[in-house]
Image (cartoon, rainbow, N blue to C red; front, side, top):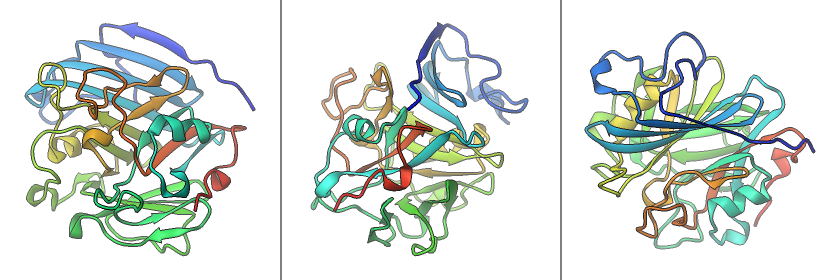
Length: 296
């Protein structure tokens, strides 16, 4: 197994070219909406995978902290997948990330709060077990699926028997490079909250995004529409909102929890909620993603 050494860089200005192509992160139709971040931290995790954490004095009208992982999936050494809790007993993102040998991970799908031992919405695990094929947000449900390492995000359900793994989320944020047309009439948990999202560009760049929230002085959080706008500005062709609120967590190897999970109601890195599954990224040699999780 190749061991990757994380490089840590801190600067007070946003790198001009952290994303592929010629557009910067905040190039947008209405650039006045986006002041430069007050601080940015950059973490080189491995070739093609970088994490960033931005602190804004004001973004979408409030102070924000947003953590972003960018992964170039054109690099054959990068593996991705879903890792579900073992024996249907929820556990933390960091614990599952460790078991998956991940270099980066976020919480992922919803789970049933009344029956925490079951997922909410579709879940096909890496071992081929289909726990559910259901929607989770009506006609705003979106679906992540992965087959032979290729990721698809779509408002259309996949063929669960044909894909390697799949998970439902909602609402769909971006579809065909445009903010999803139904998002204006549906905002899961209205208001500004912690949010977790996954997005993919046409040139196969993956983005994982976590907005912190519920800390008025430090990180207010965003609406689903704000999140859709952010994912579109990243250049995502498709993007999906996943479980948020106190579940929103981002992990990176050698540092641990990067963001400020709110489940303990303290502005620190200790407030992880026990969740049902994670989305992980790892480097070649850390294990086989199709065999990463065969929990019953």
